[in-house]
Length: 307
Image 1 (tube, rainbow, N blue to C red):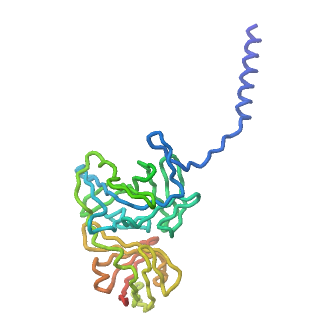
Image 2 (cartoon, rainbow, N blue to C red):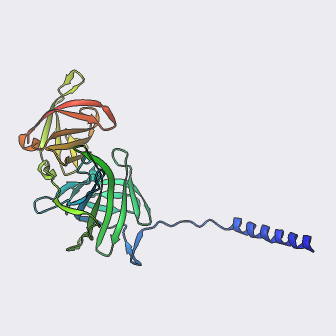
Image 3 (spheres, rainbow, N blue to C red):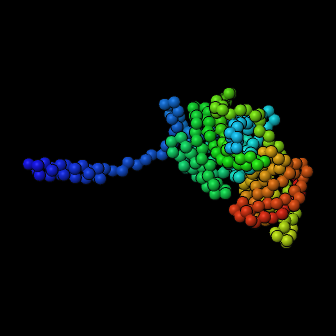
């Protein structure tokens, strides 16, 4: 009897395993909504217009926590990394101008630049940016009108002090208005005012510059190519196909980081530090521009403003 019982048990276990192995694999459907407070809200296919933003920092040496407003009465332009500057157009943010759209297949920035993205629950990652990096986005709040995210967490060093930082951005659905939509301040952080950004991206729009010279090693070249900054994120060379650029102040000094993608005049994608007043002064003299994919490839650049 005992052997019979063992045999029956073996047969039943084998049958269960067989049935489980025959079960069809359930296909996962794309998640195009976000659940907030047990309510489902749409996220995909909506133009989200940037309304406000905060920059949070933690001093890694003494633990002090501070936060800043990105925008103020006289400042609508900022960057997600005020310590090191904008690496890609995604990092440049302009109040009431920057627009995010999570399409069915692509993330669209400002109605112009298109990138791939992944979406799992309340986390989105925009991938395939100009320098090959990605930007994880954590959705912290969503309703019928507003979207708040936590984005660009990182580390930086300023004046010998190490910081951890992140941003919170609040967007409003295009065509809607919302006052006091900012989320509560994160616990433990002390307000330090509007972040000091001396570079206004609007000041370079519709200006034209001639690259009069660049030095590669000890060899000078005189290309005389014309750069036309046609928007807050794009420029052309000699009237050619628009390509991206970023411009942002570096927190704590009087320099601006100017990154030019597709800067084929000098050979690729380059980033340089120039004085904050270079637009007003109408010139860039002997500024070091570094290949963002090969940091050992520096070139000195001279440009003059002609319009």
